[in-house]
Image 1 (cartoon, rainbow, N blue to C red):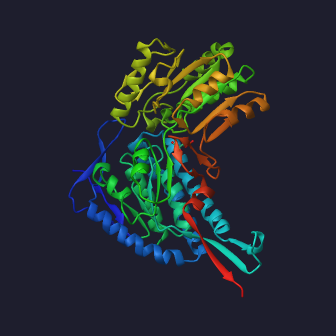
Image 2 (cartoon, rainbow, N blue to C red):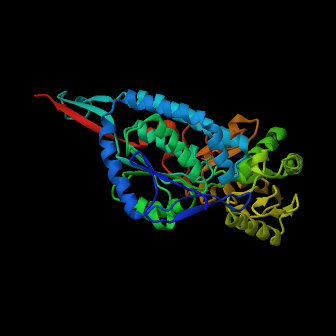
Image 3 (cartoon, helix red, strand yellow):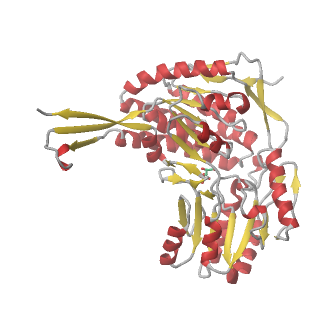
Length: 478
Ligand code: G3H
């Protein structure tokens, strides 16, 4: 029997009274790699109690001291980059190099957040009353930003460390306490990351990490009356959470179907490089991956040819060997991707490569001549399969992009900046990248989706602000 990793509550590592565990299947070997505790609702209640108490004194801890602890955690996190990256490789099959990058990026994010926090939380507003009609200058209003209370963070499998700290660090610097529910695939990486915060010496109960089955504690956590804010990244579950959640601020980053619009005058080598990087890095398992290429017919053959030449060079295999394409996270995910591929085949898409799958490993595939009646024109594969739709006008491209339920990011390739700006304005998505593939980073940039892609805006500054509330004090003069 392998060891069951403990969960983290009240500053300690604990075994659940459930006596049950959740298995984490290695996507490559498809065997159980780790086990984590299956926490109970009673344990969630205890965590919330401790979290409430810890938050009260944390909110009174000087801002510079909160920042100091975060800087310490960031440094420890970076020191632990190799063992954490090893977990990422085993749990989510992230290529080894990218796994190290994820941890380093996370350390940088935590430090940046500490710095940004002391600046933006260190100042408030001062208003006078006589700017509003009918008022004399007899009221002075002072505002500051106060914490919300308990922030519940639910990150996805594809960045179990980075998309956890992007919620943890803003919550803590702003004076909140934090309860983390890591994804099952990635839970051990997340526990190791939490260990770094533990070593930094945060007060007991301020940070907790609850593991378990979503079916048992998922709703219990998101509907818990003690929770004052939910920051979630993932799929459709986010829509369900937002429908049920109480009167608390929500930060949601859900799916995407990021379009890449290619005009005739684009630098086609740059286009091909970005389509391959944007579409196939981490095997397409990024919410910001390029998920549909909308290319002008006149340059389509050249673009497809250039992309195919690059796809042929992608290495396919285990994450330990740093292959570009690694097994997708679960068997059910691989089956879903296969369903989209089969549908496209039946409806006549052109297969630029042969479809090949071994276990969870799917070889990179470009599908040309995709039409709107195919599922892959609209659905998010979250795998290394990329559809190309040929368009005859820019309007056609914008129309396809805007007909999607999603609106996370998009990109446009052209040398004409005026056209690019007009297209950016016309695209209904949270961000449009001109002449580069979509991406969330740098992590201080605002990051948001519209429609089914999310609620609110992330990025370090926006997340800190979102996890606070304005408090006013008005001085009334006689
Ligand atoms: O999967 C969703 C992430 O927020 C995307 O982040 O653009 O850095 O890969 P990324």
